[in-house]
Length: 314
Length: 282
Image (tube, rainbow over all chains, first blue to last red):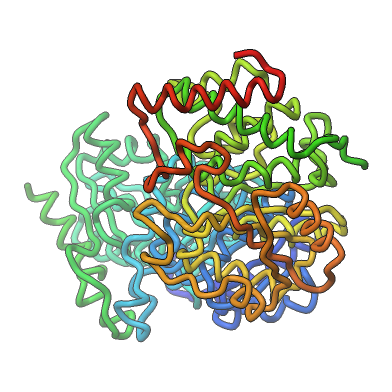
């Protein structure tokens, strides 16, 4: 069984900057928008190459979204970044109307997913961005789980019409994929098992894989699926996972509205299956290290193991 | 590309006013006040300056127009009909089920609408992006946008003005429809406006106040704005909510009206008089 215990050699933010430079070099229509968090996501390093196609509007997120919409009207493909809480919650009406409802093409990167906002604390800790984006019609919603995937999703967002939202952490992720990997179906099955299935996204994929190893040592054989495309959800993957008879979802996000909800909606309508959602339950963010926050909110491999065993013993 | 100019802008304004009223009377309700106050501005833009026609409406080199105060949509639809973007029959469908003319403009429904608006403050942001995009593409076309004076309550407007000013968007022209009223009452009673022209100047724009009831004054202001270099231009228009229709001008609260039978009759009489002046039989 493949081991997943090495970190990517590049940070997710570097992948963002490098991929944008690659796309912008190929296509003069690519523009990059920032709202004074350029240093945080490292697009400062591509500023000189992009010249006037790098636009830092200042601390004006609403204007950033509106200007991106206008740039799309004028024929450009905007890539917009800020922290996920600002990229969704703070500018929800602008994203909803000026981009989505107006049916304009743009990619939004929301960084510092969930507990990885760490010491920025509750004001900056997004546990609801996926929910907010998922209920906007026709938006594609992803959560990237490693560097190879993030580069691929950015390119997918570049290619596809309409609005794409990509959630990511800023720093290094656990390496899950070879650089040759393709991301086409909306999910990746990383491990096949028969007793239960863990459907995870983002940082929780590595946690799910670690949980699967522990469970294997206790003769519980589980599947692990990286559900990186939160919307539209890969229904086939959910249905296949339901064949095991027990599903645990795991997300660094509120259990309401995100991956857990998306999976539950498919199951409730097509194949009612016992399930448990690992995620944030009725809690705001707070300061702390990511490791401590994961423990505090119940987002560790131990929590996943417990949930699987509980479902399997029912 | 030369704009096919309307000879008599004042007459064109009356035509727009007539067809704006007709839409409201057909539907029975609507945003009368703020639609009527932008009529003269639309007449000067679409009658003379704005290089946007049914033929070039998808040409990126055309001029762009954003009605940031989206609730004035019916006045824009009247204008788009008169300039040949949409058929006359469409005007009867304002806000009807399945219409292509919703209260607030939708770029995906109505030919000639460049940006979807309705949530105040957002249209001017989009206009800054359009103007920036046009400059990135080395086009020398213009982006025009109308915001309401009530809309200036929105913080996003000031973000947009800062962005436009910082980026020296000198092919962006902003019109403030200063009709001095917002939904809940006089603008000055709800949020003290101070001096708009001074505010825009302090934000790094060219700005002046002109008579928004006079097509000639608006025309001259646009000619002035087109000569400005290095900064965006903001033209503050002195207007009246319900402009040009006495019975509506006289109302203290005319933002959105569902007139009773008697008032409707009065509105229709003014509408008919307008029709006679522009040579249309009602």
